[in-house]
Amino acid sequence: MSDIVMPRLSDTMEEGVVVSWLKQTGDRVRRGEVLAEIETDKALMELEAYDDGVLERIIAEAGARVPIGTTIALLGDGTGSAGESGAAASGYAPESDSGAITSVASTTAGDGASGAAGSADGRRPKSSPLARRIAAERGIDLTTVSGTGPGGRITRRDVENATNSAGNVTPATTSVADGDSNPGAGAAAVPAPVPAAGDYDEIPLTTIQRVSAGRLTESKQQAPHIYLTSAIDVTDLLEFRVEINRTLEAASAGKVSVNDLLVKAVATTLRLDPAVNVSFAGDKLLQHKGIHLGIAVATPAGLLVPVVRDADRKSVSEIARESRDKAERARDRKLRADEMSGGTFTLSNLGMFGVEQFTAVINPPESAILAVGGATDELRLDGGTVVARKILRVTLSADHRAIDGAVAARFLQQLKSLLENPLRIVA
Image (cartoon, rainbow, N blue to C red; front, side, top):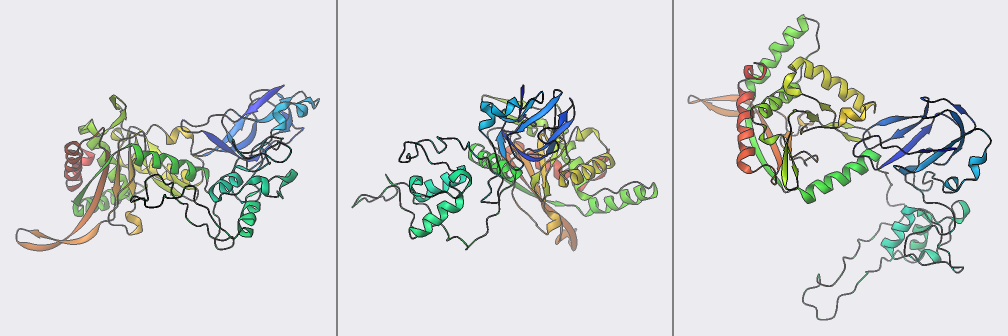
């Protein structure tokens, strides 16, 4: 008998979602066959069988969110003895009352948040993690709530109904002493009033959104961001792109975008000045030998960042083909984990949405990200004559622990010089 566990399928993965089972209980399985589809923080991955056998029991149903290393199914010899194992008693199932994909704790006796009040018979009430969190936020004692879920389990809806019955009052955890001149001192923050049920629609976060939220919050909290903006005249660059695409079209090759030229220019600048191609590592800096550029791509499931490895060694047309392919597969959730890891610098372009300028949050463990807006017509002086030029604004966000202001400014200065003299990009 062997356990099938949630594997670590990416370097940042802490848990996975069982999207679907391609084998069902009782099916015979051969080593290498795909058992299930797993959603990680980066992609949809296939879970393969490591041994021959019979799928005795599925513990984590489709939709369950499970920590890595946790048993999600049992593989046996077909006798069915795996169904009595202790591992199978602690099942994972989708959170049916919220529409979200969340992990569900065991439905055995003793289920509940640590420190929760016990029921009359000394056991903690069975409840979902979401229900426990909402109950804690609203000061609801779960022992007073009747569960309508499987086996009497308390669901989110049960807690909300209990809240509404109590008048939707959210008690403060700590009161302020009379006469206290500083109400913030010694008082816990009072949670904001919770909207009544029916006044809002719940939109569950995807795995990508949940992981991104945690990583970007960590980035803003731990990395002191500095921001530098440069206005770049890209009139000649845009004309240069037209010439390149005319040549490529004659050769029946794919066109290059402004973003492809930016990727090549950034990679070339990092090669000329590697001081920005670094990661902060406590008491040292890691200066990366390879220049691997992440390109932020918006997908229905959230933001993904496929990586163009060794971008400084590739031609603009090679970058264009690879970027286009990876962007399409990112939107279809078909990228491999290794195609989204190992980046040393990220480029985020919102110019196609009409955004002229913005700042971006650094993608750890990198130390810098370049935010690119759209090119706009602006008036400039040229030898005493007013002329219209295409101006592009880029903003560099840098981790001040690894990159000081002068280094960041020098990087932008060199990038500006390249983009305003586009022949140097391909030289």
